[in-house]
Image 1 (cartoon, rainbow, N blue to C red):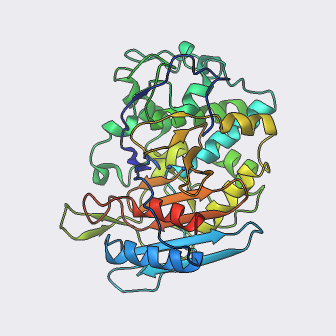
Image 2 (cartoon, rainbow, N blue to C red; image 1 turned 45 degrees about the horizontal axis):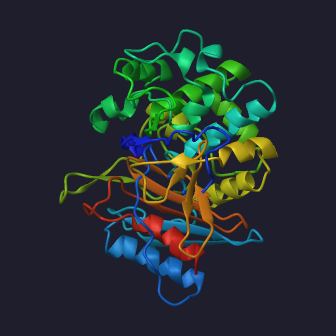
Image 3 (cartoon, helix red, strand yellow; image 1 turned 135 degrees about the vertical axis):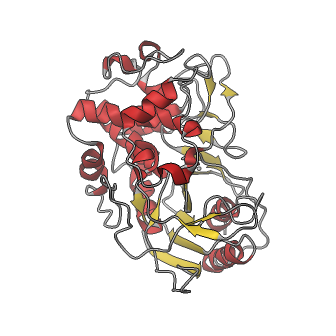
Length: 392
């Protein structure tokens, strides 16, 4: 998540950019905040497999990530996996093909999908205030759920402060189970960033509330709703939502690391209780499963046409990367070769993932096994690699 969830600067939504007037133009944070850089221009056209292999090699050699993994999927659904580096810096173990990673803020796309399914079923109104579903819950220093809509939560235009800005040192809560209500109270103790609908700012608090909305409307835990409505429905065999105290990754995986300062050693942070990330970033998945999810989502296998169209209706962002526009749990980024790649991305201590799928079904997911980056001030070459691979 980090995407932990770094807080992005606000961007003002132009006046007149209403629900029907916002143009459609990936996350983590991916967050739980997602951050990135402009795709770098590529040279002459090359085989996409060679492009990905070279990109992963550079992520390990130049950017000092212990491991880098990728899965590419072509228009016909054929997948190819790639890896570089080592799964464990102590043992030098081989990186497992399509290994599990913490997917961070890619979780937001799953959560938004379930909310939009409920919209399609007539159980949630997208432009209704969150107060209708969670009465008297959103009452803060200057926040009021009577004036914040479901759409604004999913779109990050609510103005709600980001609870992860106030969690402090990761080591202090890494093995602590933090429930949603405690995290919400932490956020609401601070002033709203702006009036709902007047600007944009990435806030994990929005998706914490979206998860509570799903639980209230369905009467079931969020993990059960995500599993039944998304994960099992499209056969994501290596994806799951960790339960309370479920700190280890269940299948073969590379270890995730956190740098100790700008030149210090790497600390293995693979094991953690991700309840603090919750509906905004707790998911565990693989690059291959993330490709399958975003291909199914954009292909109409999870949402009705009207709700998918709403998901793709985007607004400008700040703090992500140039050209990025945010829909409802979905980020659109223009490709240098034309068209748009859709996805989200996610940063959470130990792992970064970047996801991109085109409208014709080509998909690439890249994961690296450290967050923050071991090399300080390194451009987001994982994000750039998505553009290079999709345009090869």
